[in-house]
Image 1 (cartoon, rainbow, N blue to C red):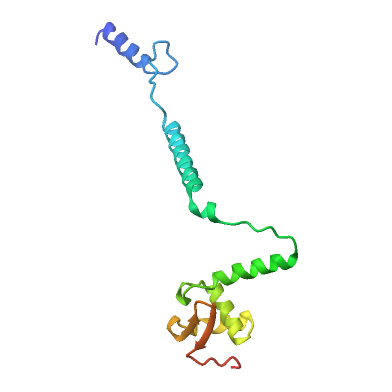
Image 2 (spheres, rainbow, N blue to C red):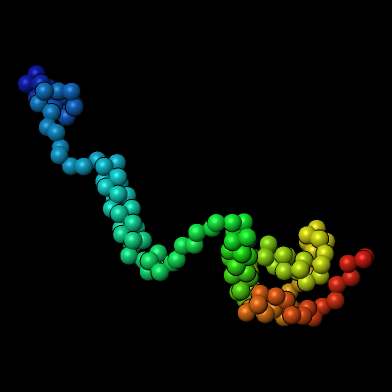
Length: 141
């Protein structure tokens, strides 16, 4: 290799380094800038969708002035949670309904919880109460 060829190669390599005066800056956005812009657009779209939601505009707010009003509202909200199909209720809600039906403690119901199948329990979705249970459980043993 000749000296001129070596010098040209070295100059080409130097021009590729960012601290060289002849370095050409690329004007494209970095990955972080693109990701930030995408996240901002996504957040804005979610916020716009939330603002247009009919759920927010039709919901009425009640002012609670006493503990009796608060108790009434909490009771209404808790009853709404039980007005689903029995199979759609979570374990905590099922155990709670079984406690009310049998009048037993949480730990006693949990001991026999695995024996209850969804098809064995006749559940009223309108009232949120258990009507009848087809299997017999002996809590004394």
